[in-house]
Structures are given as structure tokens and as C-alpha cells.
Amino acid sequence: MILYDAIMYKYPDAVPRKDFELRNDGNGSYIEKWNLRAPIPTQKELEAWWEESQKNPPYEPPDQVELLAQELSQEKLARKQLEELNKMLGSELSDIKLSLLSLKGESAE
Image (cartoon, rainbow, N blue to C red; front, side):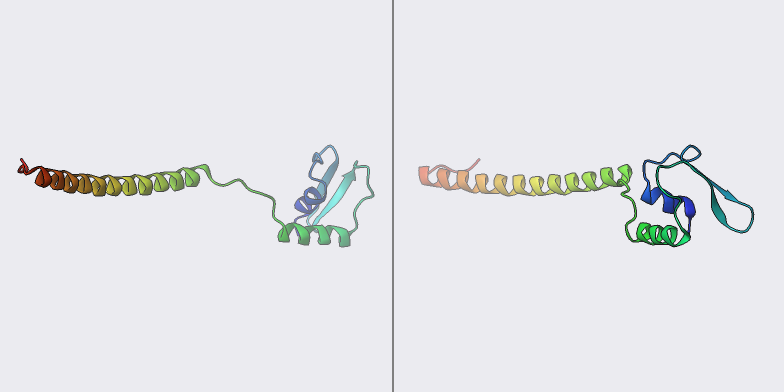
């Protein structure tokens, strides 16, 4: 258990070194000072908070580089689809032009 993380999970607005101080003398961490307007938590409470924090990790925003890479990939795909659509429409327009010319009795140049 990481004592600091357990406390910050329960009291996310707490300010370390102001609201509480932790200490480790080689036998594990413990709360040396507690200035929050709440009773000092028991070991059992701290362990429960720690377990909860592991089940519900804090929100981490997505990596900006990864987001940009995804957007670029989507844009490339959209561009390729538009190019294919443009090519298909151009081909269909050519066919229509040939049909119109044949109806008029002219030859395609």
C-alpha cells in the first residue's frame, strides 16, 4: 500500500506537508502530522482507501501525440475515400459525355 496515494484518494484536495505529513523510519510509512478536519484514519481505513483507489484509478487525459496520430489517420482515410469518389464521378461524367455525343451523332474527340 502507498500511504500517500490512499490519503490523496480519500482527500483529493488535501495539501501534503500542510494538511498531513508522512514519515518512514525504515519500518514503513506512517502519518506523523494530521491537520485535516477529520479523525486520523486507521490502518484498516487506509487499506480500504488504497484498494478503492486501485479499482478506480484517477482519470488520465489521453496522450496528445496519440490523439493527433488518430486524427491524421482519419483524415488520410477520408482523403482517400474522397479521391476514389472523385475518380468514380469523373468516370461517370465521361460516360455521360460519350452518351450525349453519341445521341447527337458526334464523335468523341
